[in-house]
Image 1 (cartoon, rainbow, N blue to C red):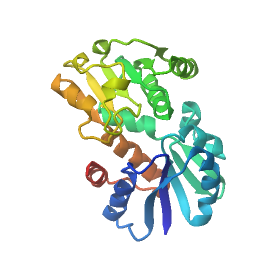
Image 2: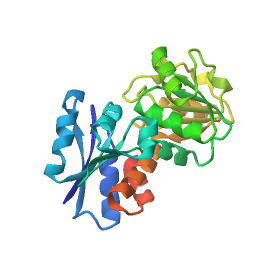
Image 3: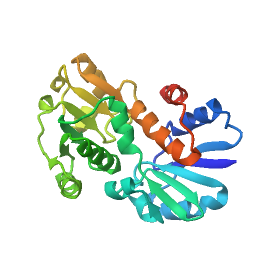
Image 4: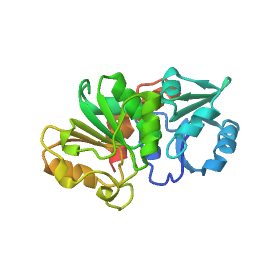
Length: 263
């Protein structure tokens, strides 16, 4: 049995296990591959990762709050992971731990169009935000970055590009991407973010990478205003499909993964 996992803290909310298990089932791999969630605090990540290969694991996804730390544990880095400065996909082989990042391409694919020239507001400055910023800038978007702690958005922009902003006017953007955890539980995301339900408008595209509530309060408000929305589940599916190919060498069954992640 080739074992895979998603590593995070917390990680109980993750839909990656059911999504990947559905992919294995669809391709007839259920008897040969498995995928599970492992909750590990930051101070236990290195010891866990070092021990996974000996337990039959061939790879792992990495989620909050470990994407930056995962990069430092790797023996080899893909160019994408190196440039982003964070990893969400680890592979274990003869050459040790290899790190990659599928978050950026997952986000871009979920948009269904190029963000070239789009005036964009990115909310957050963590590992997911790093990938989003890198990918959006690469595709020609004009990105401003907000974070609750302004110094973090300033440092992120100094490192990767973009422009930090402290008091954004959400109605002026073509594209808004929420990469924070605001709304992950039952809390109101509008309490934590520089947004109001009335800020959205027709012609905007709103992406909420949170996929706990469906639709999230953010996306519900955006839809009511006539904006186009992209659910975090679609982003999860797209980045997960790329990780799936890295591990198995096979094209992922998107429909099966999408259906499983949506339940």
